[in-house]
Length: 501
Image (cartoon, rainbow, N blue to C red; front, side):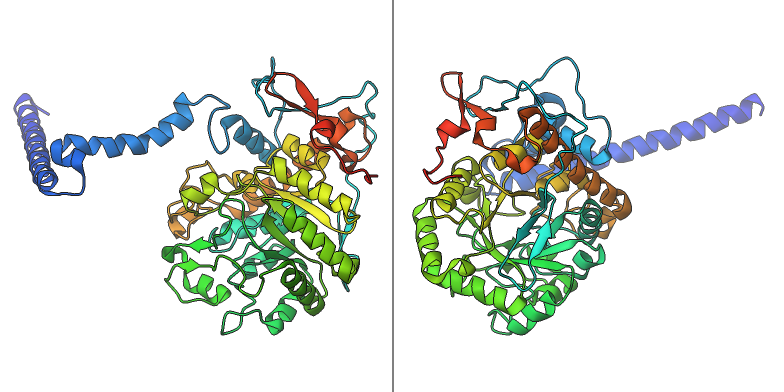
């Protein structure tokens, strides 16, 4: 290329770039003018009206702040509802990679409420396998359920979470040997496709088992119970994140398939009643539990948030009037800090009691009434790691369930967009473009690894405490830090009834 042609080429490129810059700059000026006019004339936002254009940066920084705090500014144990240290353990457990940490713990042992386990001078040998024993749920049922896994998948509805998420959870649960709760959204084909043991939850709207009037359908109950993978039924009275409020599924998540499974209109928000209309007393509760158990032949229990032991005493007294056969086969006690896809902030922040109060309350009441061995206790609410699960066992739980822990195993990054259709990991969205990031086979393997590692490490804690089976952990094996900075045994803090064995 000679000099004149090169000069002409440079001139043309320079002209194009300058014209592009002028065009882009002109477009920017026009956009700023339009935003200025819009801001000074609108009346909804005072900041934008007083500081046109510049005021818009406030909303941008608020959005960016969520991400910067999570990745740059928050310390490992500062975030809520789950901090980076907790999430990181789940991620490592799900990937089945080294979960050891160096140098020393970053967890403070001085904060009130901190739990510590009591090691023995003579722990059981590592080669003495600390595998959970199998327990039977529903001994008076036609088809009792026998299972060993301490850690299981809590209720997450199809609709609230996506098809690939349900498939990955179901396949992972089958490989791990744990159960999977459907949540109140009903039993979908994807729950069954993975091959897991299934607990069908019946919410206040009775999705999947309702007749044309929204009442419980015996025919649909029988049809679902006939599926061999369905092992138990759970009647949901209340949920930790929103006691007294029914489920909330935004309209944009009510697809044709979700509507068909639930038996509701397409594209309309799905809002469950705040309680079962036919249950107004402990007598009604036992009647409904007994009816479901009789129709299905499967173990039946209920889930609730507890706020006092008066209800529990009334329930136990009524059970003794009717006979122990009438008792629910299990009670799932949810914590006030439980999770949800959507809930009013007034309830999620302030309503209900946490598991640290209600779990020992429930266990003590059942012991007092000689019903602890009849009714299995399932603990729910922020139990995502081995230490929290082992703590729940110490206080009387037979099983622990988690939803958010398994969401982390699926790849959840705590983006806090569960109530929208914009989940960046494809877990809580029906956007096909976002769902493609969730590869079912890969995530199913992580679900299996996570469950197995939690069960294994609960066994490690049990070893160190000197017991040969995890469910033999009891209150003497854990202590809790008090306001003085000194610790107190859970045995002294939550004294067992006099008839305790």
